Amino acid sequence: MSRFHPPTQRRIRHGLSVFALMLIPTLILLAIQPVNALLAASDDTPAPSLTSPGNRQTNLGDFDGDGRADIVWRHANDGYNHMWLMQGLSLKNYRVINRAADPDWDVVSIGDFDGDLRSDMVWRHATTGDNHMWLMNGLYVKNNRVINQVSDTGWQLAATGDYDSDNRSDLIWRHSSTGINHIWLMSGLYVKDNSVLNEVADTNWQIAGAGHFDGDDKTDLVWRHVISGTNEIWFMDGMKVRDRKAIPQVADTNWLIRGVADFDEDGLADLLWWNQSTGETHIWLMQGDFLKANRAMATSPVSLWRIVGVGDFDNGSSSPSAGKADVLWRNIDTGENFVWLIDGLNFYQMDYIHNVPNQQWRIADNPPMEQDPEDTMDIGPIESAMVVQPATQGMELEPPGNGLPTNSGVSLVYLPMITHQGY
Image 1 (cartoon, one colour):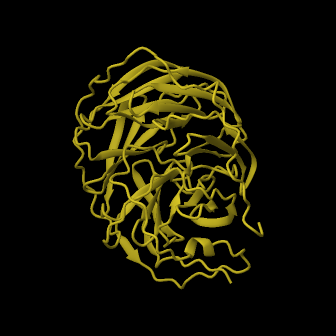
Image 2 (tube, rainbow, N blue to C red):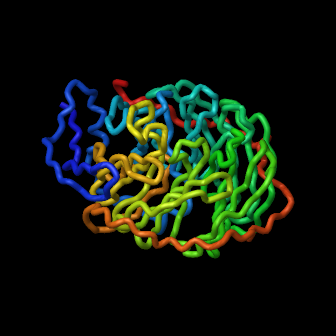
């Protein structure tokens, strides 16, 4: 019999950051394929580590087109991949999906590349620079193909969004050494057009995320400078930067942008901040380049809990948080997973979802997380410790230069497509 072992439940009352302890029995799921045994399996190999998660968008995908966030897991050692289709805070279906046994393959982008309202995945090989796309239909890979190889591994996929308003996700690359930026406009499994964007030679500038900030249905880019704390938005129009605006500076570079999503359902992207030193979180509600409202949300032990995903878990429900982005947390010691259902600048509900104690499992399109032997997630009082300074225009742009070799060097070596036996 397959079992999930959810943690002790600690339900959070609406609008409060105080835990009310409620013990419930271990849930036993009957008549379910023995897939989740992979997630619960012990592994003596230590979890991979990084110093910092960095300024990086952590948006989740919607793989079955129901408007709700879903979760993809990847095992760091054996290459298994596992899909959770979510319905609010409940797991409605799950399955092992195609295995990619070579650990150098990793999911680097999640977006809807073929316009079917279901999220897809882009894989990149860390050594060879090969790239591969999986077009998804719920729990299944419906199509897949090698896309253009980029053998220089200094090129990194920095942002995913729909930059030309064709209802298909596109890709933006940034070179970690040269500061050159490049855009691929995608049409399903193919690069339909590409161009070099303005160069930003100062590599201390990071693309922290992408979202619709001005309501023109074209995705824009958020930049953050990791030394000065200066922030800037590029308003995009296809393969061109239409305008660029500085937004308020946050000089303390311990503050990281960890989510770009719509938290108040106004159709415009907002920013989720997390302080890697103190564990504080903060939401900025944006209107273009204007910060219209902001609030400190809560504090959690920085040594344990990480923001690993942003998406709308309860879309279509009658809750006040429906249609608004929510936040997924993961405990890097215990494997507990925890969701904040967000209503603008307020909590609607907080609750645990199924835990995954084996730290070799991590959520796809997230960097590995460092482990630290600490303890529980006691959410502290709401405080505002973010020092916000006036906007400054601090980014020096160079004209477009030589970019990615997108029309040559295409590899025809396919990513292994081994379906787990019995599925």
